[in-house]
Length: 235
Image (cartoon, rainbow, N blue to C red; front, side, top):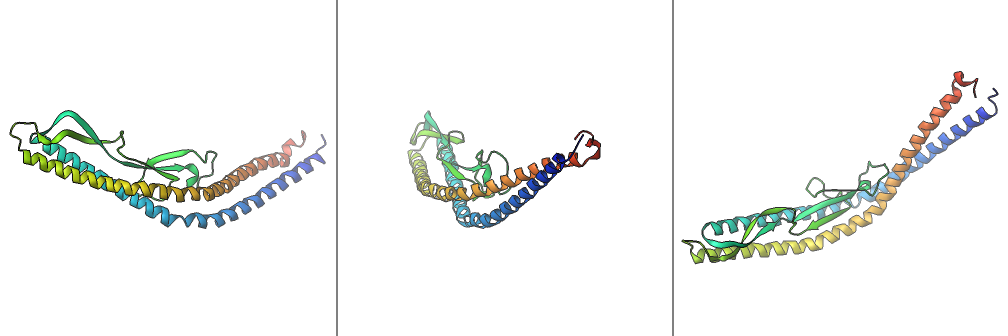
């Protein structure tokens, strides 16, 4: 069977495709090197704000744990009642990230979301922070009703008043810290939203590099077939 000029034309076509893809890969690699420093400019601000958020959430939950302890101690000496008892829930901060937040991500689901607890180990990374006050999925302990009054035998009213006062002080501190978070979370999310545009550009180039490399590997297989003498009789 005649193998020319079609075989030669295909080889020329394939080699041209590989060469063109390599040029595109080099161009994308250059673009990534240019865009990464811009993304990095966001790091100090995002990390700093996230770090403060982690600290505030930790302080809030420490106060809430102390409040639960005060409620329990008060109830143990006859203050308060289980009628109307409620649950103290912790505040939570979640690091919610698109796949494209990762500098190494080059696959096909850039906007898939991964949610993990925001901690000191992942500050500044995510696409946005989800802050939840009194998260119903995260209970700390019981808050007994009417803890400022005596209900049990041998109860001393002054002790109940003192417990209620201590609880009120800590609850007030919680509200102050929550107010700061109400300002910080939208602020860091605003910065992270602006950063996403540059992360999208980075992902697009990384994805292009991956797909072009895969295409070249496929083309090389076809080239190998054309160059293999055992197929000459058929092509």
